[in-house]
Length: 165
Image (cartoon, rainbow, N blue to C red; front, top):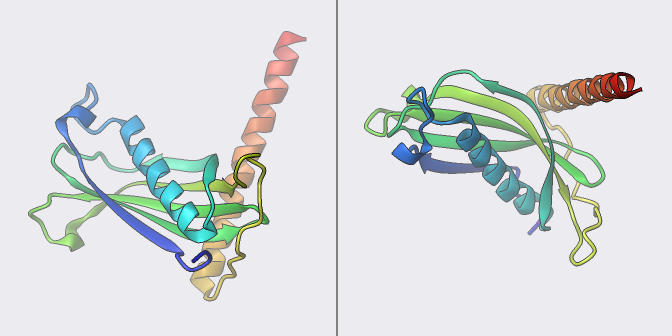
């Protein structure tokens, strides 16, 4: 049922094939995990096929080691008419350690848009309203992150146009 699943948690085991040249999990692999968790959360909230529209504020805080148990948690923090904004935290720990020892490794905001079937047009999603002060803070944070991303995109577009012209 749509409009019910606000939060989704997925777990992955960091494998040797996920390693980069520095010996830690490749940032692209972390981004893939974030996108997969975001997709599952978006479908869970909207009840519709959804696509990634934007990612903002992506921060790699700490490395993930091979063999770490990685938890990707996506929490709905804002809805537009057809969009869903999720705050995503990626934490990792040695699987033999206590869950409380998990360290924050990555954080971002990812936006998905729900689509209708064959035409692929955006469709409305169930609205979500902040219930607590923390919910309100996270909703504002998500909007600020995406506004910064839009502003950066406008600057890049302007610079490209001026460079060509």
